[in-house]
Image 1 (tube, helix red, strand yellow):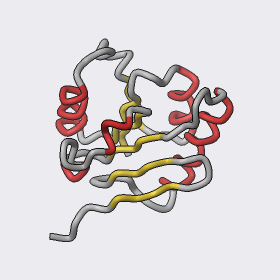
Image 2: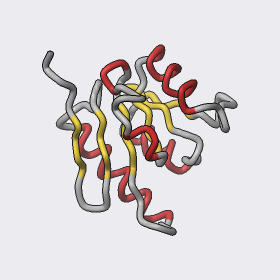
Image 3: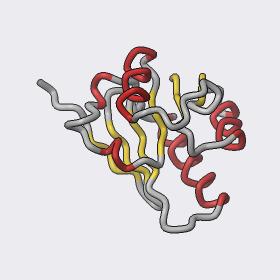
Length: 122
C-alpha cells in the first residue's frame, strides 16, 4: 500500500507508517506545501497513493472522487489536539489497514471510530 502524507504531518508520523512497512511519501518532502488541493489530489491519482490529511475539504467526494486514487483518509482531530492523540489516531488507521484497504474509498478517522464511504458498485 502506498501513502502520501499531507503537509500537516511531520517526520514522526512518517516513521509510524514506515514501522508498518508502508511505502510513504510526504507533500513536504516533495516541496508541495501550499500547493492547491486539486494539484495534490491529481498527484495522488497519478501515483495511486492514498492521501492522508487533516484537510476536511478532501471529504468532498464530488470534488475529490476517491475512486480515482489509492484512497483518501481524512483524520478529524478535535480542536487543539495533542501530538499523542494524533499519533494514536494514525495507529488506529494503520491497524485498520491490516484487514481492509482504503483504496478507492474515503475514510474518515475519528477518535474512536473510522467511517468508510465506499465507492459505488456501478
